[in-house]
Length: 202
Ligand SMILES: N[C@@H](CCC(=O)N[C@@H](CS)C(=O)NCC(=O)O)C(=O)O
Image (cartoon, rainbow, N blue to C red; front, side):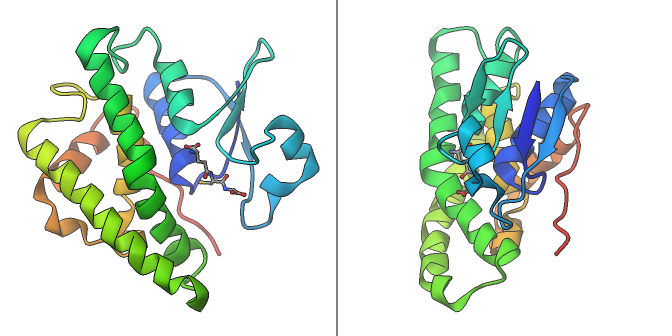
């Protein structure tokens, strides 16, 4: 498997982390978003949507969308419950991550950590904080009651939510306000095979 990605991007880190935990062999192809690599014709030919992460498989198939890639890699493992309400709950949190969390927590981080707070994005940054704080509060309520988003055991929903939550401070969110999230982040970091996200070098 070839993974096209930026190791400091949370969406791409989901795949790096999960491959590390499951010991999945792969080749990593670095894509630099700020340098415009995702807009280049050679990449658009592979993924017309122009987004990373993106994977090519041995059989010629390709797959985009970080959470779909996690689902594919998790098939047949305890990280994706086989059927019924447990699998549905995993999907619930995966969709929550993409609709209610990532668009705000990741975008605030991109504005602060990648772009260094350009004036023209400050209104959007503030808006991201309103919705991102709501998402973190929803997560906190769940984690007060449950060890992981998968219940007793971690699932790919935990991988997806961990990716941008553990670096939310790089987007200006104060994680110490969320004790249950802080406990869960520590638990995630103690999973065998855990590997840290790569810091950006500007
Ligand atoms: N929903 C997608 C989002 C992917 C995404 O937005 N990737 C960003 C990097 S984190 C990207 O490729 N940006 C480049 C661009 O939009 O040109 C996923 O979860 O994979």
